[in-house]
Length: 375
Image 1 (spheres, rainbow, N blue to C red):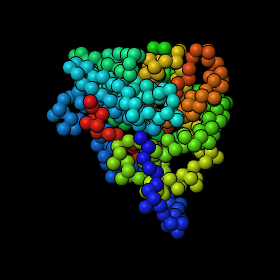
Image 2: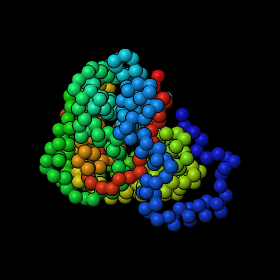
Image 3: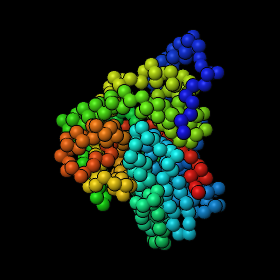
Image 4: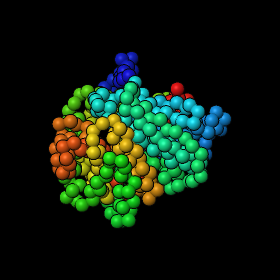
């Protein structure tokens, strides 16, 4: 699954690397944050509220699949396959897109499926269909979404599908109103899943300590770093070609050829630099949301994904940004410490950690076309 990171025939000379690094470091910071590249034109077209004619010509249900794929996924792997059969759409895990280093249990994979299912629920209602997802814990763990006619209703959440993004930049540090916090809490609560909103500075600093400990462990894990490199799309051409992965521009970084991106990571991607970035971003946030499951199994992971996506859509409708801080739940040696700090029972699991606040829009990540995810 991993691609070769640097082709031997394209390995740059030391002089080329020096000149490239000099050129990148001279770029104004805002250059990386301007969503004006060719990949942004495609990314925005994929998120258009108007269904693409080629999709509608096949089936209106194909557009529901398109909107489902606008959900987030770990490393933007888009680890799902969809099948349309009569009055239902099934969502199955695509195990070829697993991330065993960061997600050995496939926890994030099933969370991602839940996010896609939640998008589908709101998109279906907007065209007059009631969507009822059913998760089968047996076999591969497929979500079947049954569709029945109902009164058409366009909601704030269905409209937010096209604008939602994980905004990996600094926020403005301003608080969120009690009414808005209440709406976020309601949206993030589900069957066997609750959300805890932490917005006092001592509570957020406590989470920051755990994030730093877990991030340091990941940065010192060679398998984690290599897996992350494989999913980073350093340049616009690479993002357009693959339609997936973590686009460098979406994190506020300059875009560049892959060979240079790999070298730059080796020079500047360190535990110290990353921990400083997370400290700055957490301290610029209005709060942190922790999603907690009553039990740790695939059904609850899917439900956690649905709850998070409702939270994210509600936040988007309110003009609030969010981004994952999942290191404390990804590092198995740190997760029990984090759970204990939250006062969780032994059978409860912290599933997701998300910072939120108001801030600027960032460049969008890519998505694969519907044809690539349909079976």
